[in-house]
Structures are given as C-alpha cells and as structure tokens.
Image (cartoon, rainbow, N blue to C red):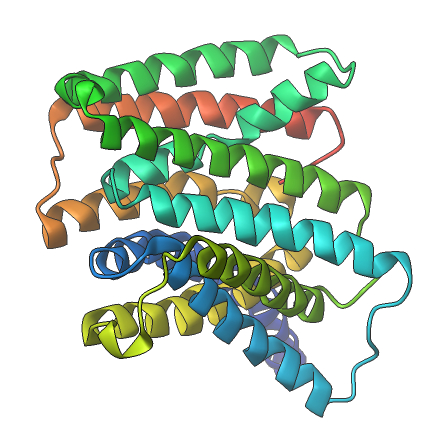
Length: 310
C-alpha cells in the first residue's frame, strides 16, 4: 500500500503543480514585460521595437515547428491566423508598447487589464444583454480608474499623456476583439505554431508601417539597453511566458487561469516604482484595488454565463 501511494501521489502533485507554476510564471513575468518595454522605448521608436520583438519571437516558434515538420495551416485557418496576428500583436501589443512612450508602466498595465470590460461592451452591441453583475463590475472599475487618475489630473493637459492613454485604450479594445475571435474560431490548429505565425505576420505588418512612415532608425543606432530589453521581451515575454500561458489555459479552470489579469498590474506598478521611481501614491494603490475588484466581478459574470472567454 505504501509503495503504491508513493507512486501515485507524486504524479498527482506534478499534474496539479506544473500548471500552477506556469500560472505563477505568467502572473509575475508578464508584469515585468511592461518595464522592459518602457526601458526599450526610451531610446528607439516603439513600433520598430515591437516589430523586432515579434519577428524574433515568431521566428523562434516557426523555426522550431519547421524542424519538427509540423503541418502548416490550411484554408480558412490562414485567415484566422492573419486576423489574430493583426488584432493581438500588430495592434494590441504594438499600440500598448507605443503608449508606454507617454505614460507610466503601472498606468499602462492597469488600463490594459480592463479588456474584459470591452468584451462585455462588444457583446452588448452584438445583441447580448449585460448581466447585472457585469454592469456593477464595470461601474466599480470606472470608479477605480477615476481614483487612479486623481494623481494624474495635471497630466491631462499634456497632449503626449492624452495620446498615450488613447493608444493604450485602443490596444485593450483590439485585444478584446482578438479574444472573441479566438473563442469563435477555436482551436483546430497547433496553438503554439499559430502563435508564432501570428507574431511573424504582425512583424511584417509593423515593419511595413514603420518603413512607409520613415520612423525607423538604423539598427546601429539602437543602444545596447534597448537590445537587452528586446532580448528579454523575446525570450521571457514572447516565448517562455506565452508557452506557460497556453499551458495553464489548457490545464486549469478558467476562474484560476485568469488570475494573471489581476496580478500583472500589481507587479508592473510595484516594480515601476522600485526601478523607475514611478509614483505609487495612496490614491493609485486604492484606485488600482477598486479597479481590479470591479474587474473580478466582470470576470465572474463572464464565467457564470457558462461561456468562459478568458
């Protein structure tokens, strides 16, 4: 009996432990990517940095699956991958990276965490009713954001700050559309290979925009600190953390796997204050708590609909 327990229990622990470890990784390290992006865009155009990051990250996945002789997408799968590449990476990641030129990492992370609210609103315009809990959650989150912005009132007269907020909000809307598209056209193709192709397609799209607009700088002029940031974002943000993210989604219930949404902004705010000296006042702390509480209610309402999205 004892030997049987010894052989069974480790297997159960491993089955539960690895997805939880993956979720912990996602919760912390996706929060740190805000700081890497912020450091990188200090010294180079934001969209160029996003394009380089996505190209290198996408190539890591694509080359790996080419070597493994993985089957390529077929027919309509290409259309889905193309749309998701534009929504999830070219627009969502590109715009949020650009927004960090003008706002703090903590503020960017808080705003980006609000994407479930856009999911509710998009569904409403598609004819679905807003549940009472969702509406309460939206109002609480809005109140929390208002509290956060108490310390940024003077910045609202700064056009750069306004532009950064617009870019970040637009990135969350794009991410919400991407999630709904993913849900609608769910998973008939290797998600990791799909991820790499999305990154690669988005990088081509972004390179086209930056070249056409003449905003790129020569690679020789990109400082070492920005290259370090890109390397971190590729290895940690675009490869390891996405692998951990998909793994956690596949092995954990939605209500557990979505916890990262609440932890990422906290990590970004705390590390932003410690490393970059960004403001972390009582109003920001209270506002962030209220915002994430409202967001929790929105997520809970989504799960109660029996159609989990995140």
